[in-house]
Image (cartoon, rainbow, N blue to C red):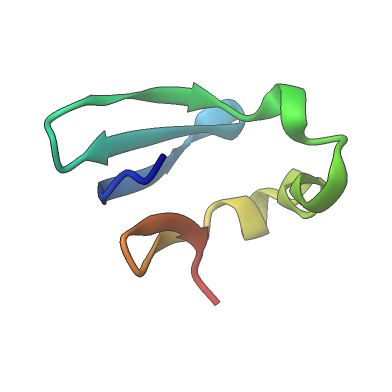
Amino acid sequence: MYWDVKTVKPLPDFCIYVEIEDGRKGVFDLKPYLDHGAFRELRSVHYFNQVGILFGGGNLAQ
């Protein structure tokens, strides 16, 4: 399924706020994923706080 992401903002304690074009919004807790695969890099708060939108999907800005 594809969602057109409108807003992504990093929050304290490894959570992100997400708004989707269809009006849905919420907070996603990433802590359960930080010990798995590509999510491991997000354990760095400095890196985590670079979260942003790239091509309509939530991605890390680089």
